Length: 172
Image (cartoon, rainbow, N blue to C red; front, side):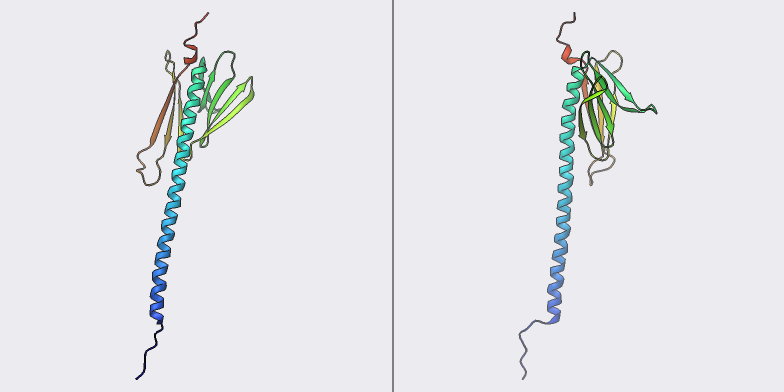
C-alpha cells in the first residue's frame, strides 16, 4: 500500500489565498471609508470654527460702526458689505469663491486682511437693515455632507446691531 504524503494540495492553497484576498480587500474598503469620514469630519469642524470666528468678528465690526452699506460689483450684483465709523478705518466683507475676505482700509490703504474659509457648496447673502432698524444680517447656506438628504440645506443667520458700542455714550 501506498501512503499519502502529509503536504498541502494546490486546491487547499488556492482556498487559503482566496480567503486572504477577501479579507485584504474588505480591510482596504474599510480603511478607505474611515479616511474619507475622517476627512469630511475635519472639514466640517474647520468650517464650523470658521463660521464661529466670522460671527464674532462680524458682530464686533457692526457694533463699532456708525453706518453700513452694500458693496456692489460692476454688474450690480452684491459682493459684500462695508462698515464705517467716524474717525475709524472702514471694514469691508467680501464673498470670494468659498471664503469671506475681511479687509480693513484707512483712506484706500489696506491696513489688515483676514479670511474665513467655509468650504465648497457654501453661499453667503448680505442683508441691510430696513430703514429705521439697526439690524444687519448675513445668511450662510451650506450643502450637507454626503449621506444626508440633499434637500436639507444648512442655513445659519448671523445678526448684529449697528452702533451698539456707541449706544451707551452720550451724544454732544
